[in-house]
Image (cartoon, helix red, strand yellow):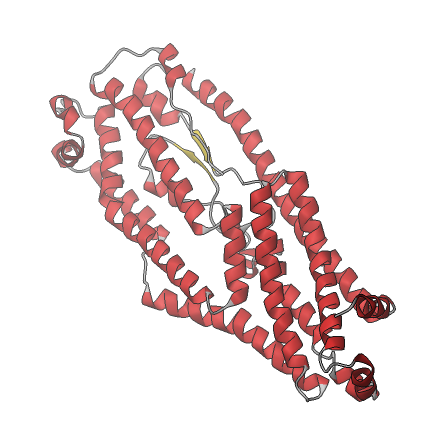
Length: 417
């Protein structure tokens, strides 16, 4: 490959209107994907900021109406949220399907975690057009279209033999042309990503790993399309073969893998956790108080000296059976969590044989929008709820005098991106 051949092929491509059209289409689609991701992340951040403002005001207003610890705990909501990372705009991941904000109280927690906002079922089904989807599923099709007929088109035009004789090599003209075409598409695809990353202040290391992964992925498809273009068949046959490979690796394989994983790794439903917990909490009203306090004290022996209940209703008993509700569904909740982890690991293993799914998972991991990041957020909710219980339990069980000033020491939720 010489400088003169590069210049000659570059000039040839600059006059190819169809190719220029594909480059502009790539640039447009990439820009739309990045802009949509930035807009969604901005909306989520604005929602979090707005909720943070109102959260403390609502809680202070509710606390001002009550003068005992039980009522204060009951009417106090606390915002928990999963802050999007600086690179989340490129790969929204499970933030489209899993709740990234909750308002929790001192009541039974597991049901609160698995309650979710009503979403758009059609959007949940098809997913969002973010950059990860564009890079993983759309870009290979563009590369296939512009590379599949490198030699077939020249054969049909009668220029194939002439190009070979003038180049002095059987591969040089096609290799140079394929390299320039693929490079132009990669640049058009990555340029909006770089601009979006700069505007969102993405860490340089994260951006480098993302671009390197995308470049390696597109190089794989480019080499595959280049090798297929050498096949002495007509352009439609080569195109159909490459698109069939894309459908197999990008759609059929992942879909079949998901069905297999779902069948081989059964998990309970989040709704089962919610229903079981509500039944446990509601049944506690009709059971002897010992049925609540005995399992509670077994889990929290530090309150055994204060577990006796003499009145028909006491706040310590009320919050004890809320926690017992959590204890009742703990095995189901753990099975649900472990099942999701197992399914995700299995999907990651299968993605090794499905490059589009592998790239999408890779970008989601870099963006902190994969399942692991969401499960870590759920664990932070549980840790925060334990802090709430540790704050209120001494006041409820020891029957400490109510002091509004002490509420300033309520724990605050700490988010992570």
